[in-house]
Length: 327
Image (cartoon, rainbow, N blue to C red; front, side):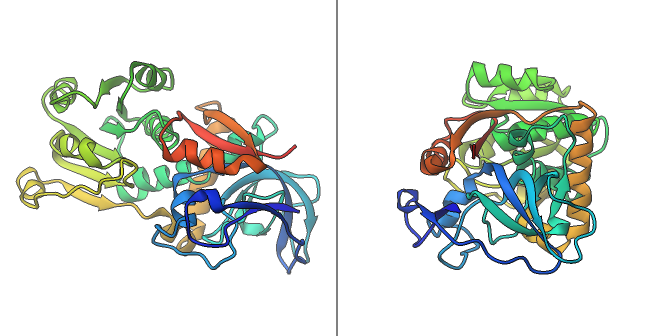
């Protein structure tokens, strides 16, 4: 099979499309012929050796896939050859390839109405976000959620899930086109977080109270304003730092305003508490099947163009999700 292989920790240009042998299935495993694979910011960080997790080399990026079961091992109980499925890898990756082998518990049957591209957009951003809002943020119906970088893949997932959970959403995005996109996907309001003192608009929208939850995958300058837009008893969810700058917080601010700053480390929780993580993903797939929302896939690239796709992600040139596809 062909796969995108990282042979050294270096800029993503070093990734190569190579022919690799297929491995034999162990008991309880299935082989999936990959039709689509999600591309995420951490894929680039891991390839460059900048992530907390440094996978053993050589390594195939990609932790979310969708495709068709092509082979099942012994003791596989709920899947058969020909099933349309979504797959979730561990930190080992393996998704940027033509085929992947996964334990059966990491494979989810897909509704006929869901495309492979949409399914490949679910596990990372929707998994991260539901964990953040549910297990970490304890979001309640009627609460206000401020979403930074709201037009990106993880941002739109947050808009979708927060609305599905009954919250009111303020989307923060940098251009009028991106703000309009968030409104089309269900946000109640949209603000321009490149403007000075934009937190005042957030305060106005919430009647002076401030938001209950901030979802921040951006960091940098956006953090400096957002942390002042949070209300009493709020929760600030730290997802990541796509802006490149890791901000600092004056510790008296959570004391004075009585809010919590909460780290969201999804990959560790997912792999350590898989039964809960699987239930979360089943909930997301159910909401998709009910028509509550559909992931936005804004761009797709052939597997061989994985480097181009990763660069689009890291340069923040995209809205929604980017996927790799195999014919």
